[in-house]
Amino acid sequence: MAHSLEVRVPLLGLTLLRFLAPMLARSKPPTKLDIANTMAKRLPDAVLLSPKTGFAVPAGEWLLEHDPANRERGLRGWARWILADWTTISCSPRPAASPPVPPATSAGRTRGVRGISTAGPRQLGLLATEVCSFGGIQAYMKRIIEVMSGLEKAGEAKCVCISLNDPMPVDESFETGNGKIGFIGAARSKLRYVWQSYTNAQPSMTMLVGHLNLAPVAWLLRSIGRISSYVVIVHGIEAWSRRPWLERISLASADAIIATTKFTATTCAQANDVDQSKFLVIPLCTADRPVAPSTSFVLKGEFKILSVGRQDRSEVYKGYETLIDAVEQLASVHRGVQLHLVGAGNDHARLQALVKQRGLDSLVTMWGKLTDAELEAAYASCDIFALPSKKEGFGIVFLEAMRHGKPCIGGNHGGTPEVIVHDATGFLVEYGDVDQLSLALGVLYKDTARRHLIGAASRARFEKLFTFDAFRRSFIQTLLSDSRRSSSLARTGHVR
Image (cartoon, rainbow, N blue to C red):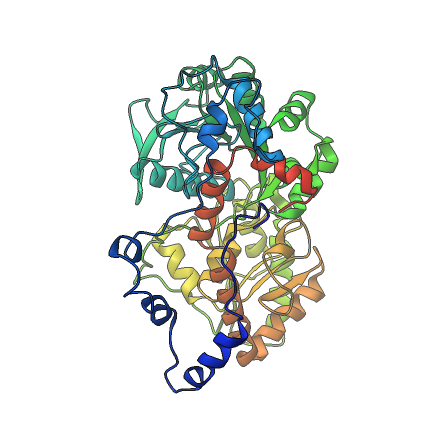
């Protein structure tokens, strides 16, 4: 509609409305199909039964018209801009007998991020740090791979993932429910990783960079012509501070930057002197096909509080000790409270010793790492989910709980406020505030009806914003849409 391509006109004629008014007042008013069928006697079947089509613009003829005298005849501003971009990447004028370039389809296969024409499947690559392990970034990488494998299965793209830390051999593939793509592990060798990235690149490839640390690799590949474009993904805390100079250059030179939250997009742009209009926000999502919960695993307790995350000394900001203190405070006035901590890492033993030292073994259960089926059962059987973190970039664990219709308590920091709506789908608390956290837990403990209402709102918010289908649509639109998507965003000056 912004380009005046919308031609449907509202049916607002006064004569028509007077004619239809009695029919519209009936118990069964005419439908859109009834209106369409009024033309059945006047139009041939070729018109009535034709498939739905898009609005075709003769861009092919415009782009192939290389006569300097009249090649811009009839072109509007945006078409001149496309023509200028096309002619800068064309090696030579095409002969007059060449077939016209087809117009862009709904799948957007004709042009991509930097406008390289793609006659066949689009070439897509993913530079990942790690995929086959537990964590929010790994989960984001897996969801991207599922999107890519679906595109490959549909013949829309040829895809490959190159992982720094995964030990898989070169000839294996990563299989998902949607299909499989080429998967190459570098077994933690940076030299091997750069070499594999170079050898598996294609001149027409768009490279997704799964972590900010890897952006210089894509910047180098594009600089030497091994790929046509690259998009950097920033997740959270790693992008909130000023990065080394080469990473800043790689960010600023990217065709687009995807962030999981607006907070990360804004903070990263300010800290690294990057044009904020380069950023697109595509939130995290859960798996398209979650595993079935274990039938033999269930959390015990009258009021079961679940917390899931890495228990690592580098991530003490998760707030586990604050949660333990708040649960102890709540249990002093309410019976049946039980905290279940799920996760592993080099801080697990210290937390376990802390629980034992304070005599809280009957109140706090340290589960360590669970299987996927056991974790699903844990989410299903808990009453609420809590992770009062200070520096959470997004928190896929919140989405897992929301998918099960559970109220969530998180820190009022980082990207969490974009996931949890305070007093609607859960509560947001200040990091380290034991009293505030204990109060929020107490509200959900005492008011069962409110807890169920908040849980239902949590589930509804998940269904609206954080499903895999929404994630897939956003990524496909970003990767396979119009050639200057990021540039058009730059002109609006907004982070989407």
